[in-house]
Length: 322
Image (cartoon, rainbow, N blue to C red):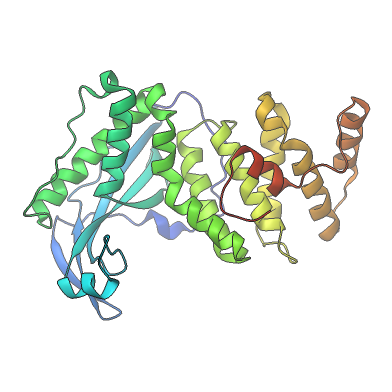
């Protein structure tokens, strides 16, 4: 999908190790990891680069791993029973890039199972069957789930499926697609926030934000909401996260021209959060104070309102306590 709208570059601080290429031939190999044998399938070639001058959003599955089910017990089965039965599943690494003129140096990845893709397909097909008429989704099979051939075929089909979604605005903006992109990680992050383990929640939220920021516009509701949730996670600990200022500054820049009334309810709490953070870091707070004063003169309540976390929770209730 050629991108018509560029997004603000936020990638300079990313770990460059994410750019490692997967150029080996398709194979199934054994790798010893903490005593557990893993089967690994790798994509034989990279997806081609776009034509000169284009910027293309690219979904690529560079590898897949066969893992023992372990803790994923089904109804009526204990974890030990599942492990003893030797049940396995395939986890696909979904790499999201914006390529052009060269490869995106900062791809973002999430791991998904066949059931994640199936849930996305069935949800979209139920709501928008016409938009999926040309999509060939891989069916379930009773045997041969773990062959390199089947994993390769499914990976290619999943890539085409995701490519199709982002070319159709109604599919791209569907709650089903957003759930696919961030659902598991966001739930895990919110659970960690509930347990006051912010240092573990922040990396999950950062990855979610970078992923959404490649797919949606800078000021999209889902992008700004996640960015504000990230700011809240970075600033609610007694000692702010090292990345707190970086994300807070980005959020302030993104909010400079936001017109969405629903999202504006986060702006005052965001300013108050940044004001406190600037005070903690010994930074000049003049501009933030002036902005709050201007809004107060317009009759907007700037004191005694909800915290940023509370305002986010009102828009998008999650597991974390407020």
